Length: 425
Image 1: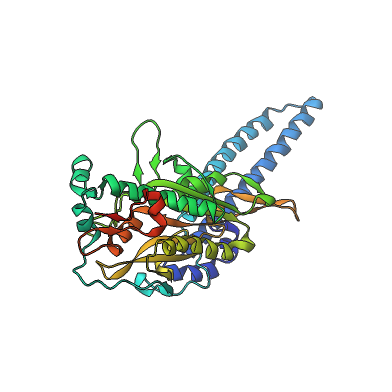
Image 2 (image 1 turned 90 degrees about the horizontal axis):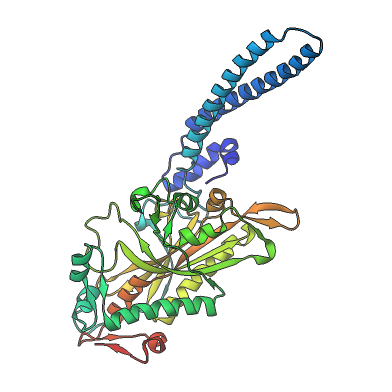
């Protein structure tokens, strides 16, 4: 959430900045709601003062032996009027807060102008896409042909479309990737591994920005408890900081977490229906950092480099792009996408999004740190990104490592995790 005070005091400037995200801030509506709020607040305070004065006069009249029935009658009218004003004020404040929750984060100045992914700007490329002297197959065909590979028909039978079953060595490779990512991030990059619930409450999703705007993208459980399946580990991990004041010496906080992720993929019908690119259930190793505002920009660069390191160790060609304003997500101030090379599509596809949320999530969650120089709490800044999406990494290994006979070369970094196996055949 943006700072309500800044919106009130600098609404025109914020509205101009949000146009980069193609969001039109209703300045007139905000001004009207705020004007009504101020008027009701003044009325409420005035009535409270009048009630206090009359209460005082009752005591004085009783002490003087005077009749207080008339004052008591007027007090009843003030009470009714005050309760009515308070109810209106609460409704108005709720309406104002609901609108504030729909306003996206202001994009950073370094975010380029643009409408969609075609306007994203490439920052770098790493690795050279391999040249094949045989017909390239996609990961679905490769996986289904393996003796212990991918089974999409079984997944459709037991659940439905956009799911996959992995068998034998392929399932082992998927597990090896998770272990390799966690070991690298905790052992080399200084992250603390955490294990969190896969179900969260609505307050957690409001805290990180998925609610109320993106409820259609979520899976909500039926039953006594209104829980949601997590769309990403970002939600439970970042909410560990909710309503907390962190000591300065504990910063930066760096967490790595492996979870399944569940997404309805609303609006994506007809896109990537084959294979493992866009699924309702997939797994990720998520990286989350909580830092001081002064360290925010450097933390985003560091976290992105941590995710890049996994791709480099797995020898997977990729590129890094900075998202334009129109493609930057609701809660993000700045995002780098890492896109891995997929030979069957002859293009780069997203495998990680690394984003800075500045204090947007922290304000919603009241996640703060205590500044020892002022002894006052200040909002944290939050950063997160995939390090990496496990299923898409598996896809990239299958496609980039495919051999003419249909076998798959396993990257050297994973050999020890695969008990020395170098090929899937």
